[in-house]
Length: 348
Image 1 (cartoon, helix red, strand yellow):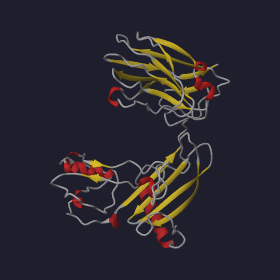
Image 2 (cartoon, helix red, strand yellow; image 1 turned 60 degrees about the vertical axis):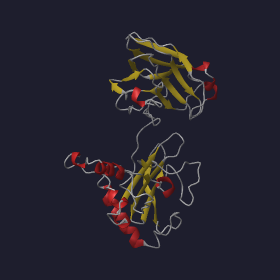
Image 3 (cartoon, helix red, strand yellow; image 1 turned 180 degrees about the horizontal axis):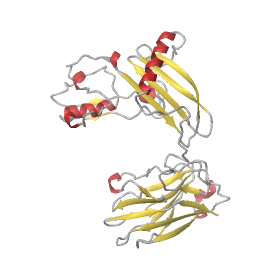
Image 4 (cartoon, helix red, strand yellow; image 1 turned 135 degrees about the horizontal axis):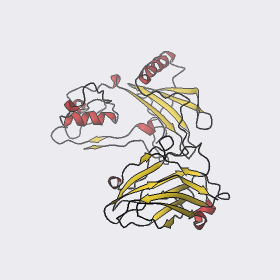
């Protein structure tokens, strides 16, 4: 059993003595507890100071299950086997572990953060790029160097006090980056939001389904296994939905001009032969607050156009830049249905 977390404390929390929290590459955002239990193999009460990263978990589990031999020849695994350190068969060796992180956030909250970090032993380099506008970053950046063995709170920036060590870390970091996917300083994805609709679409389009603009992301709720990943064919989004699923959501975060637009329009086709529940036009004026509108879908294997009067929802008069708009797909009472959906647009 491995129990850990994918990130540090919440933004609203206090990670003291660690600096910052989730979304950042300071220790408060990436240092997490890890508990591992394997009776009769890992001695009870073992505490290890060996630095590790989530990629180590896959290698460790493969080794524990005797499955490492099934990894394709020539396939390099990111991570190391932690069992020798946990069973005291190998000495803790923090000095020879190196880690790299890269963080990009273009979320609707305006936290456009481009940050990188590199750790070698106790030394850690954090690089934060200057944000320009329109989801682009300057090549200009600010570097910070910390010795985590002496300064776990990342208080004293040592770039000026230890220029030789700083240069050494920069060189090692540049070498590390040559082995991973290249993302240049001006890298950006033209998203309207993180669900797939690009910011450079006309302002009357909520979601356009094609490989250029839609990344195949969908909110499936807690019934992931009952909803397929979207398939996009010639601008049509296709999803398989099984009975018992939480209605999957296809939506975008966008600032709608509610004085200009009052309706949402889309075309949907549902395979015939199954009884289905209601669909919902998702209208949340801020984050998840708002009143959705129900509509009655037709399951006959043919295309039908649906027009939703958004003004019937209280959310329309309270709309904000964090508003969410889209469609919650209907769910069959038995079996499964294939639902096809075309561009979701706004209308006057």
